[in-house]
Image (cartoon, rainbow, N blue to C red; front, side, top):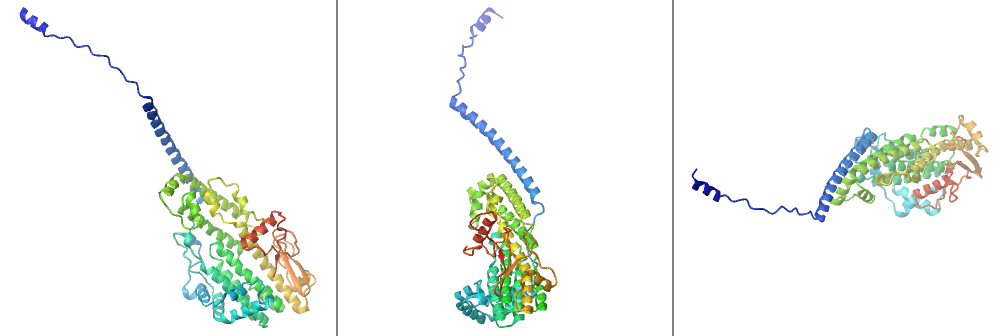
Length: 474
């Protein structure tokens, strides 16, 4: 390389420029806070979602273990019956044939009846009977039929929409037949009066297979109407021992213990439906007054509440099973609903709403068992009066004539309390409080069955508000 070329190469070299050192800007505190908050939120949300899924899975497993084999209401329903053989079709025709004014209806519902009612009540009942001969004949025809199934949609998707209008109609027909039985007794038609009393017992047996507590209560009420009719008929007529023995076989034969258990299975179906139909406490509250409305808010709440809702359903199953066991044996102490619900956890909202009051139903069931036993004793006492012209001084005298031991009081296993007041007999059970209250029943001033049962429950708990609850044959 020549010197000139060497000089050019040196002259073209330029040293690199000096650059300023990089300056790292510190992160702003607010940005650092939100970035950490977002990271924590994502981690927390992930942990919460995982915990939610884990708890929901655990609750689902527990619920699956508690449910066991599912039972649908339609599986508990009475078997289907062809219309030509269905007593329900004839009962409904009898109800459609009813012609009653308000005063006549009130007179029929009067517990005193023709035998002990006033002149106004007797006149109104007589008019009701003369205007409803067709309804009476149809009711008798229906009671003589073997099978009965009323038109109830047991397979409905919305069980809350099931209507039972036939229950009220059956009660009205029962009061009409009771009045007819008393009228026949006053006219001296003994066999006709007894036939009508047996019609009432058969009506109760036709209602009892329905798998609902309300149906069971109405069936008990109809049988109770039959017992009242029998009591008034026996006050009016005299039966021979043969007639009295024969009518024992025509008393109601419903197994109220088995029927009660069957109704509880139906109530379980209603409860399970409610837990499937609604999904959160808000909808459960709305269910008390009608079909709950569903909106976005309640749906979102239902998703969040799902694990607690399943645990609530488990509490319902446990509480129902506890009630079932507590009321299984007739004559067992009845526990108020408050005892069942007081230990429920805070989230058991639907359980508190849907749990039936079984103490009241258990008391009713036991009453019917007592009335049925007292009916046999009353028949024997009537037969004794027929032979001797008076009631016996002691129950043992009628028992000796009857030829077999009388049923004992359900509550203590002792004979029923018996005495006479003039030409009238007094026969009663000591009732659930296990005390002889002199034949005094719970006060009739209560305006509803629920209030009367509450007063009776107060007696069971030792309250001074009501200290008597004898079950009196009348």
